[in-house]
Length: 106
Image (cartoon, rainbow, N blue to C red; front, side, top):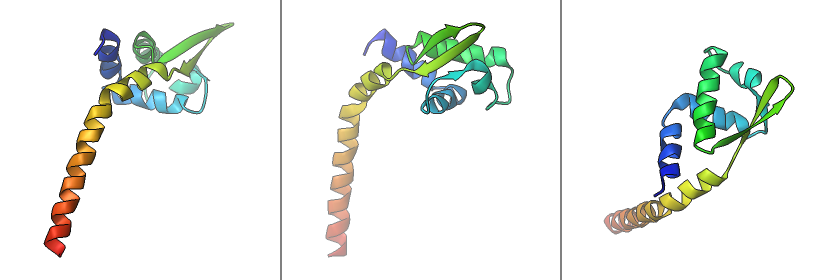
């Protein structure tokens, strides 16, 4: 696991940052637009966006006085690759449980 992956996990640990990423699924948004979805001040939203940007989860584009943020999938794909063996582990465990339950019902 890379240091960047550690940053991604740290960024995703916060519910507000996860919600920001969810909002960005629909496309780029301005800081003001994102802030309108939260009960916190804009500087707090900007701090959360900085953490996401530092982790590579969002990119920022300035247009005049506004900053537009966009979701970046790369770090999430790296995280998915890291999590894949665990997904396979749980799938195997559930398959074993299904066999045990089928045997009990027979």
